[in-house]
Length: 303
Image 1: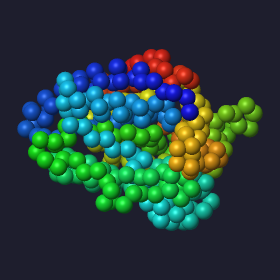
Image 2: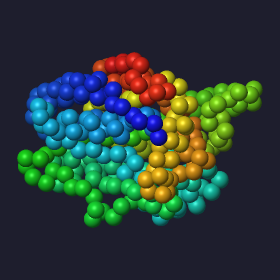
Image 3: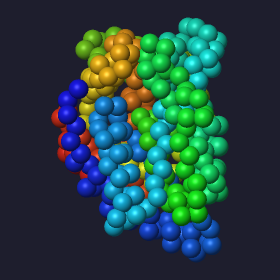
């Protein structure tokens, strides 16, 4: 996998501190105490993991010294047995025969974690091992999860919720149909390079319907950072490189066909809405970093 240098945190840290200050002022006015929840949506393989590590380290250490927790949406994947049950209940839908798409995460577990963090209680952060079951993955036993908020001095002030579909909002059924119809027509004309048009409409609708439950998680966010690709088709190659690194490190990872299914069509459906902003009319709470094929930042927009 190509080396990924962090040229993103220089834009993200000032944004986070700006948004955190506004959050703290709002909490003071309402006499409430709650951690600042920052969502981080990053296309797969674009340097999101590197950025998260840098953000966590920078925020936690002087001069900021902000206790910071990280929760990945990947760590909310269903345990292996539940994923198998979901796949077996929907055998004709290729999008949910493995982890990845909305419907394969445990939203209730995510909300339980958020609720505990908001209350300042000792909180276990879930962990998922993607190398288990020949790359199909499984949730790690709870006894091995990291615990935060152990003492009064370490109450989390910042929570980074990161993942490839964090902030995705479901579309109206008519909008899904229009996007799918357009993709199918483009595929029939030849030269189509996307994946949405290669799926059955009912399978795409299943994912969109499942995504409605994810609004509960998105609504917890105070702000969002979106690492966006100039061309969403970059994602497939980046993800292949990512899985190749996982196989090299742990001996297990997704195959090329599994990778294609993993990212199948979702970016085509939901990226436009994400780019427009997930917070409705409340402006300024979202930062969009546009990156090129080399994963370097080309433009920065605050929405």
